[in-house]
Length: 346
Image (cartoon, rainbow, N blue to C red; front, side, top):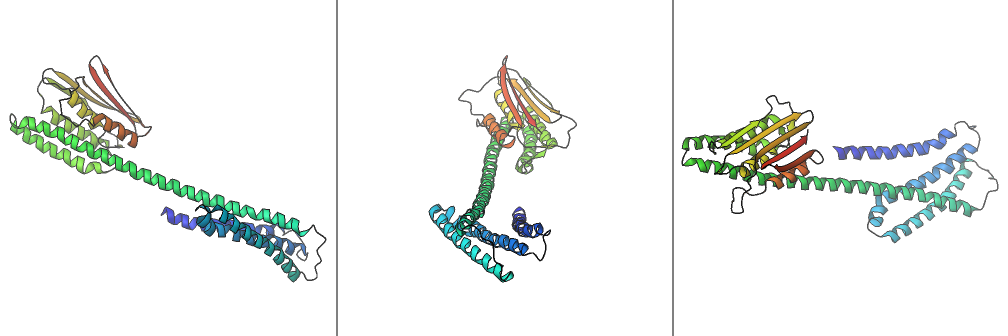
């Protein structure tokens, strides 16, 4: 649609400009005596060069610049234009004299400076449409190049975002399956319920998150179900609390950003030997959405393979791509407590 508009607008602009240039001498001569020979002389002296300027402009704009100038045949390009301008300047003088004699027979022009001066001035004047055609064509080429670069960048970013997203989903399923595996022998009924819950989560991951953004309420429901699923895995030593808005406005966010922090909390904040307090909090203040996750700082050793290790780095990359200059992500350890805070501008 945009290209079709440009194809229509650009020719109309060209026609409008030339109509203005052609009509201007006629409009300026309206105050003159119609019978005066000055009027046709002015029109002839103006319209004939305009015709040659149009030839110079469009021969370069449509043919010579693309074929020679942009193909680094600069010398040939300027030689062709020098020959073209020379022929047109000579033709202008001959044609103007012929038309004046034809329209005003017997007209004896007053003595004027040598013809070489007019040749020199007309030659310089003919360089203007040449320069303008180069400038316009170069600008159009630059705009097309910029548009292509933006399109290429957009495709690359979308591809990278999809790659990061596909990394996240197996990571999520891996952790969820670990939860079910730990329950099968000792709590088979709970394992069945967990599989059912996992099915709902998978449906959200595979279908609802295919869109660029999802309603905030759906993302909250997804996080709630995941936290409830993880509660089934851990003993009473683990205290898990979360606070999400009960009334959610109709806003949309990029999916699966906060789940990374939740997974990271369960991975690094839970040990079999000690009790742990995990908390998740989501706050909405005007145009900012802030998610906070806290857990005891108990980093895994190198032999622990409970996760693919892509979590926070994946999240950082996604935020840079999806919320450039519209997010703040930070994490810290104080008094043995790891806290991650993510704020989004919505």
